[in-house]
Picture (tube, rainbow over the protein chains, first blue to last red):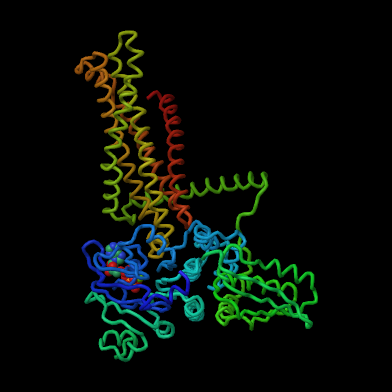
Length: 258
Length: 379
Ligand SMILES: Nc1ncnc2c1ncn2[C@@H]1O[C@H](COP(=O)(O)OP(=O)(O)OP(=O)(O)O)[C@@H](O)[C@H]1O
Ligand SMILES: [Mg+2]
């Protein structure tokens, strides 16, 4: 989809969730989730550990089917569209999993190259250039020939990021991108995320606990609650911090201070 | 990304030895974007070029395609001692390039496998072989120590684990052992019967099948089934634990992985392989009886008494000894390959394959050696 077509979407919602319930078997994790993720949002999913953030992410990227409710991506109902359409929609996604999920038998370069080889007609040399560029964006220039088992946990995370960005996707999903990173790398990552939104008009969905990043990059968010098993707040995190009617959310965003 | 989107690159040169690159149109990643080589040729022809500047006001769209092109130009500039002036580029591009060059390239080369000559390969093969053999000996030593600790009641393992593993390797293997032993019994009976019938000695099918199954085939077939079924499973379980650093986690708590993981598996197989062999031999003899009775007119009671006459405790002892040895071999190969596993998904695959290959090779070698030993001893 071109940038022109993007602006033609009437109400600017990129992903719409309507009355979503998600469950593993009979165990409901979250219910009544209704919110929009707009074009060029940096959308933060927050909530306590185990409340279902990663599960929600799996739902958004089409790995898991909601037990009820609708997900619309660019105004197309994802689970009611054809398999072919679903595949096309998924090609516009880039995903960083919580555990990195690099392919362990491939080098970092091969990890980034795989989607490029599958979905583009680029020449070998161009692919190599793209790999070098993406790895240097996450500060891993020179690690092309390393296997995932030969680099540190934080580096694996960053390599996963490079892979997620390989195809310049329309929507990027990051599950705790800054976990395991030092403050400087973490800061560079925030800059990168802002830059991707700014220059490539990417919509970015981030699961994170880092308050500092939440406030510096997030312009929209949803707060999932583990006890009531539903969302208890949505909106700009900087506003929620002071103006949210729910005390729990304010407390979370102020690090426990009431 | 349609390929008919328009883009262009114009090169112009002014008096002050500055090269201006004018970028126009859609510079998103696609296969036929201009390559930096064009600029390289130009720079080589005009070696007095001092600076490269950009004019990008007519760029409509861009993404990674433009960034990789520019990174190439920057590299060219560095190697030709030419200044690169990025100020004429969109701001987003400049910031992305800034991010990409924020962390210097990691220089140390990766010690990936070099191309080796034949002699070097042969040498490597011998070195790897001796290393493998000494590692195997080391592992055997560790297991022996664990066993003695077990006998002294000091080994650290969960009896519950042992029971679960026993259930998995024993009762759950019954259907396949039944099937294979039955078929082997049939084959033995048929092969012998056709010959024996020529002498009217069909009754000796009983001797052939019972001694064949109990002494040799029962243990061998069970061993091979268990190598494929259980040895592979052990290697995959331990290999995956190795990949997830679960084994390191055990070690940090002072738990010896050999006692906690390998010992119960070893015990389970030492117990269950002989039992399964005994069971398989009985099934095989039953299959032999069916053939003798229904295809070769032997009375079923006759067959039964003939079987009892042919068998004695010595035969059973030989069979059980072999079965125990095979059990040890399978547990050893499975656990050893699993514990040695590398840290990737394909390493788990390799560990599993080599566990099965190692145990089957060792089983066949042990089978022939034991047969010779028992022959020499006259058992
Ligand atoms: N495959 C699964 N089968 C059953 N239940 C699961 C599964 N995966 C997760 N759960 C349950 O779903 C709930 C939410 O898990 P999820 O991984 O989404 O949490 P999270 O919000 O991402 O937590 P964290 O911040 O710790 O990563 C948890 O209570 C967990 O027990
Ligand atoms: Mg999670």
